Image (cartoon, rainbow, N blue to C red):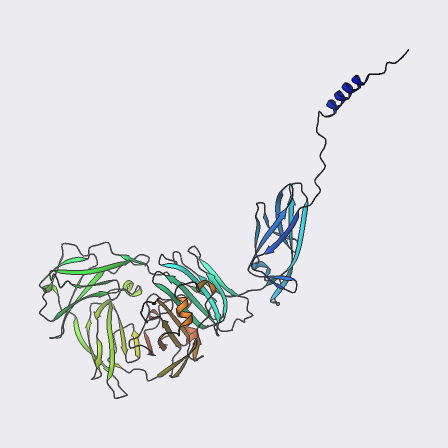
Length: 547
């Protein structure tokens, strides 16, 4: 029997059929065993002998590549996972605050950073780097009440400086911050003196408040008080008047902390009063308005009180003013120099109740005068209807603020004070006893086409140091508009002052009682006295951290 040999055609067909049969399923692909590539950088880090130096927080920017894609990247410090990212571009931010305590004695500590990249097939690649975490020393915590950063604040920073002015640490305060801690990389002890500055950029210009001569131990935290935020009073501002004229020699005063007004001399049947409400105070407005009528020719004093919410139908009548409870009193000024005082300003303030006093809703009982006194006497008017009083006097470089009626005799402080300015350092020479606080007020008070407003007030321990160096400004603040003129022109010193306080025993006591809880000094000290130079009238700033 013979076996037939297939023809070539049959062989071809058979081969095709076999080929089709074998291609009915794809061949098994080769497994992906190629690891991804990886590299990374750390934003803002510096290098020291092969180690990357970091602090506070570390931002790792990772470049991971693979032909089939990257599934995730991970970061490890000493084999402990500290972060992961699965979306390119890959960035991992690591909080390093917990690593600063690894060594209780060393200022820095080395750690092993490892970054892994895993591709979609599960292959991994790693890169390692030694990092040095520098321990930051916390200086102070500032607790911030809700809505502290109000609409008038554009930017707000708090920064610390050495007593030589060198920057130690800075933090930006954001609207939602309720607490921030200022720390430093410098090696400082808890008793080392430093300065703390609050820097605010508002719609009105730049404003700085510096507290010098403090330590971590003295002032571990500050509890800020809320800014009083005032809004226009919604009621009417124009009221009917009767019986007033321009020929009597009288002047009408309508003046308090939250209102200002007077007679409309174009229409004597009209009195204008502009009022404002405190939006976030415990008490939004006073209960009353105080109208004061003075005749300087006859030395006549009469007054009228009305409700804060005057009805539009009410008529403010000349005949309704009274002098009931009014008494004229005298202050004798002890003048040891024998020379007449060339400048005097005083005012008597009244508060109808305790809430008005705590919110500083005062009324001008006697608005005082500016001028020269030659007989060493000041006559003022007292009105018994008020529950609390305050007295303010500025007299030829002497200043006092007292939360009571003035005494019958005042002896101005016999201290002397001079200052000199060298570059950015202000030095003082003084002869004094009992002063506890020095105060410097800077400001751009020269108004011209290049005028850019700013003010800067600084306090220091006047028993401990005889001057102050103005702190360096952080880079973040150098973009503020005032900076170019401030940094290139001589400092404009508005006022230099040394002060003492009743019920406050020293600068440290002042820091604890006034600064730590952001209190008004007049609520703690019944009598504040100082001498000042650089301006004719005493400068004070309402609603400032330390005034």
